Length: 93
Image (cartoon, rainbow, N blue to C red; front, side):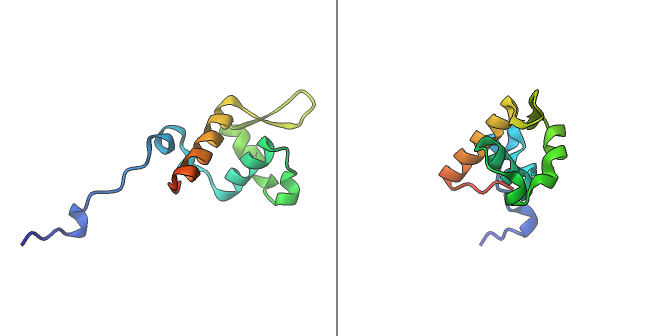
């Protein structure tokens, strides 16, 4: 009989979308803020406005000429990956 210890067990691999875009490195607040900006939902009412600076530094959000938050192209790709992972039933993070 073959015995496998916990150290020998294969680790689950993250999907390609998670690995490439770093979706798994986003906190819940950051994910919610990304959805809020993309859907023009008030992030303050959602309670996630504190993640704004971090999201700008991660190049997921930016300020437009009027100072409003806008999603970057990279942020849009990350959001699309989150939606796709959810549709596939894959849990990111």
